Amino acid sequence: MIRSFSLFIFLYLFWLLLSGFFTAFLMSAGVGCALMVTWFARRMNMIDQEGHPVQLGPRAVVYWAWLLKEIILSAWSVSKIILHPKLPISPTLVRFKPTQKTDVGLVLHANSITLTPGTIAIEANANEFLVHGLTRASAHGVVDSDMDQRVSACEGKA
Image (cartoon, rainbow, N blue to C red; front, top):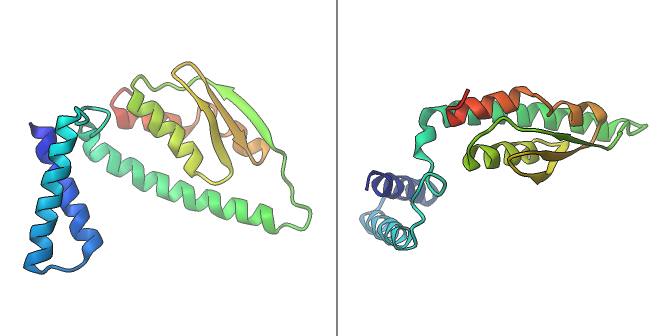
């Protein structure tokens, strides 16, 4: 029940954020929509640790702030590579074993790799990730990385 309430609150706040208007009609429409989506999600048994991972809590906010910084730094690095006259790329594939124990952690890690410019998680499972990097350094940078440790800490296993 606590997850359902939390989902309702998140959905309603998201509605308010996207709406930007605070009239009585729109705010009540937001309540109605958030209630309906929450009800549908409960009927489909989608409100669980994977569907609504509130157990990550504040650790996720700290991780997202760090990830945003890494995305910006990586985007700057990729921009320099693209603008370099000799285009110094060295596409590389690497395989490594992630340290995450939960599905939420594995998905968070794989998506974080893909969100970071210059790297893409091609395959992701509990035993092995296959990652493509624009350069040899970016590809090898995901193996035993700070990101892996931070995702494990975010999921509460480090």
